[in-house]
Length: 547
Image (cartoon, rainbow, N blue to C red):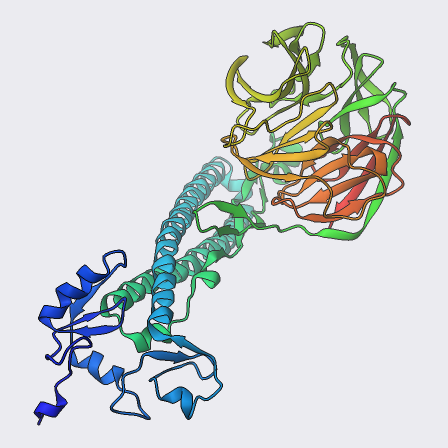
């Protein structure tokens, strides 16, 4: 039974406590509550009704008449003002309310991130459900085709149809199980995110200091969405049927393809970054060297892992195979210093014409003007994932530089300044190369700036790589640039006879040398082998640098 001595008193007077300030960790009576808020209006307060839980927790275990107002960093426990002179002498001591406020901020921040995670995990789950539906529809269609064929030729192929049906069923079962396992794994993570959200909401609502101090954040663990197996549906192969080989040519089954989809990380702002799945080789390997018979090789663009287009000062764009044989050639007079080329999804080749201040396109009809850039000289160019043409541009007087994005020949976007109004690129006449990264970033190598400048797709500045964070022999003057499927950025370092590799955030990873001499232009083939065009030697070196 409580007595008068058991009544918890206000921290500012002798009246019985009625409220508690979570921010200041003070007990307040009804009258002092308003005074507490008025005296320190600049400080945020969170006033809640006082309960017995607060009273019991506030009592010091070693000194029951004292309240816990400090926190021992060494022992990780709340203590009273007398504890530092006894059991916690010479320990690191902090004010308890500061520790609680830090924990509360962490929980609030985690809650914000967890809500973002919930949205992203929901997207993954929805995508997996849609993929399973599409897969089922596809395999159902394939199975129907198989049945129709069986009905037409059942006297001959009944036995083979039954065998292939079983084979297909086994594949479907295995593939759907993979998709279901993916979904189950994501559902588990999704439920955990929901649980963490509910837990954090409860912690903030109940404001139990013990539970707050015991709080362990799950955000870092949940930030990484793991990679998953992917499934490409099996496909029936049905060639033309000939009576003499009817059994062989009726049908066969192309197995489903299993691959790994990269996982991704979710930043605090909700940005998505893909997780690398292919690693750099310890020692890159030179696969082949091709002599091109070009003159000052400056532009290179892979069409496949067997064919490449090149451009040099001989003003000819040539198509070569791996042996160096010329498969196609046409005159492309540009009267420009930089000879960059790009291929769109239709296989048409774009190149810059300096004197006419335009971009020309080589298609089946011949050479046509594709983009008019009056007043600006085009330099590096590439087609992005949306099919738009991105062009590095400098004014005739070399006083300004920018990137233009063109859709169907019309200017869609200009990128020239950062958010403070400062130019992203330095003026001058020297080369600029450009490419798009897998995360949507726009990467530009600017010889004048001696840097690689990376912007978001929106044009917002991300970072600048100047080569200062890696050991060098000579100054860094970048030329050709390319990116791989892991969002790594590769840039030709002509003066140091190497290719530099940096990650998507500008961290230097390694050099690729392999006997390079005057590396100028870069391109990756369909197998992600690196093709390096050497300007002075007119050679192409094909290098394997990924495991």
